[in-house]
Length: 461
Image 1 (cartoon, one colour):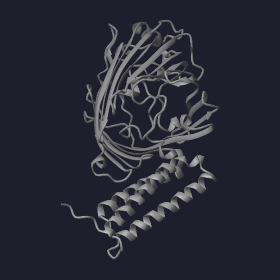
Image 2 (tube, helix red, strand yellow):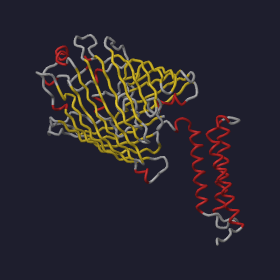
Image 3 (cartoon, one colour):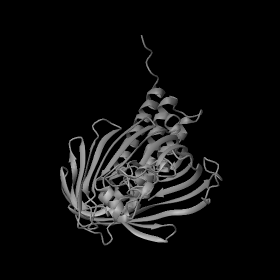
Image 4 (cartoon, helix red, strand yellow):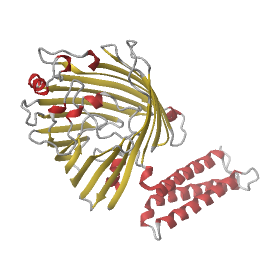
C-alpha cells in the first residue's frame, strides 16, 4: 500500500501546479500582446515582471531551508516553461527579425518574405555578405596562377515592400554589389493574392529554378560561395520581366511565368550567364515560359523540378531555341541536411549562332550544358543544443560542363569540364547571422584548376 503524501509535500505539488498553470497562461497571453489594452511596450513590460516574479518564487522553493519541499524534477519543469516564455517575450521585443531567418513565403527568401507577414503598410528587410578569398599560388599543372587574393563586401541588399490590403502587395530587392560599385534591382513585382491555390504576379521576377535563384540569402545556403552549377548553367541570380501564377494545391507548390527570353548574344563557351537580361531594356522579340513544382508532403522533405523553354535569338538571326530542365531534392531531419541537384540545358542553331558571334574552335557556345551536385551537412548543436546556435560542417561535390556537346566542326575546351570539392563549416550564433569558412579543390579536364580557401560572413534582417 502506498504511503499517503505529507501535507507539506501535497502543498508543494499544488504550488508547483499553480506555477505551471501561471507559466502556461502567460505563454498563451504573450503572442496576443497586439490585442491587449495599452501599448505593446506596456504589455511586454508587464509580462517581464510576471516572469521575474515566477523565477523568484521558484528560487525560493529551491532553497534547502524552504518550508515547502518540492521535487527537483517538478521545479526543473517549471523553469523550462518559464525559459520558453522568456524567449517568446524576447521575440515580441525583436519583432519580425526574430523569425526572418527561417520562414519562407510564396517562393521568396526568408527575409524577402517579410511583406507577406506584415499586416499593412511598409516592410523593410535585407541581407549582406562579405568574403575573403585566398588562392593558391599555382594552378594544378604547376603554372603560376593569375588570381589575386581578395577581401570584398560582396553585396548589401535592401528589401522594400508595401502591403495595401490582404489582396495587393508590392515587393522589391535593391542590391548594392562590390561596396556599391554596381546597383541593380534583383526583383520588383506586384502580387494579387486571390486564394491559396491561385495567385497572380507581374514585374521583374526571379526565375523559379534550382535551390538558390529564389532562396539566395546567406543564411539559407552552406558555403561562402553559391554552387558554381547554379551560377553558370541556370544561371543564378536570374531575373526577367514577366507575369504568371503561383500557389499551392495540397502538398504541391507551383510557380509558372511567361517572361522575355534570353539574349543569345551574351552566350559563350563559359555558359548562359551573360545571356540574362535582368529587366533593364530587355529585348522582347522572343519570349519564354518557365515553371516549377515542389512536393512537400513529408516533413523535412522537398522534391521538385523546374523547366524553361523559349527562344533566345532576339533578332540576331538564328532563333536559338533554349530548353532547360532541372531536378532537386532536399531532406532535413534532426540537424541533418542533404541536397541533390541536377540540370541540363540544350540549345538549337548553335553553329549559326557561333558564326553570328564570330566564335570558332574551342570558343563555341555549348549545344548541351550539364551539371549537378551532392551536398551533406550536419548541425552538431542539434545533438548538443546551445540555444539558438548552429554549427554545421558540410561537404559538397559538384560537376559541370558548359560544353558537354558542341556543333560539328567545333571543339570542346577541357577547362570548361569542371569538378569542385568543397569542405566547410558554418556557425550561426543566432539564426540571422552566419560565419563561414571553407576550402575548395577545383579540378578541370585541362589540368588548370585553382584551389582556394575562403572566409565569409552573412546576415539577414
